[in-house]
Image (tube, rainbow, N blue to C red; front, side, top):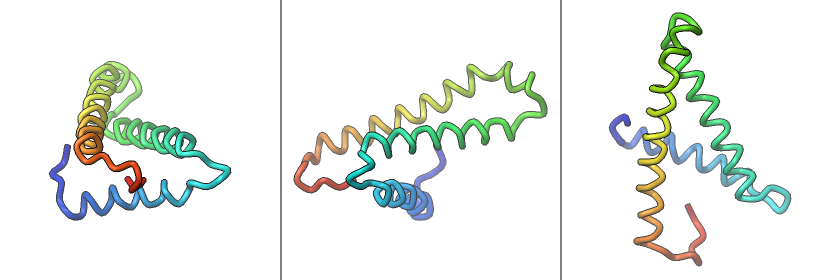
Length: 95
């Protein structure tokens, strides 16, 4: 993962702010989360594709690509789930 600096956090916060704006009576947290994850997967697949010369080359590296993104997502998710466990305050209801 890239170093976490102020610009990194601002970009992450911008994505979270957009997700929060999409919440409404008609759109649930689960729906927004699913769209967010789908968009992230789509963007990361594109990022990966940009680093290859051919589809065959990318296909040979598919397992490594998948493992990399799954590992990074799991690390980030574990960090934030642990944070919410340690600082649990459901009444705050903020991410």
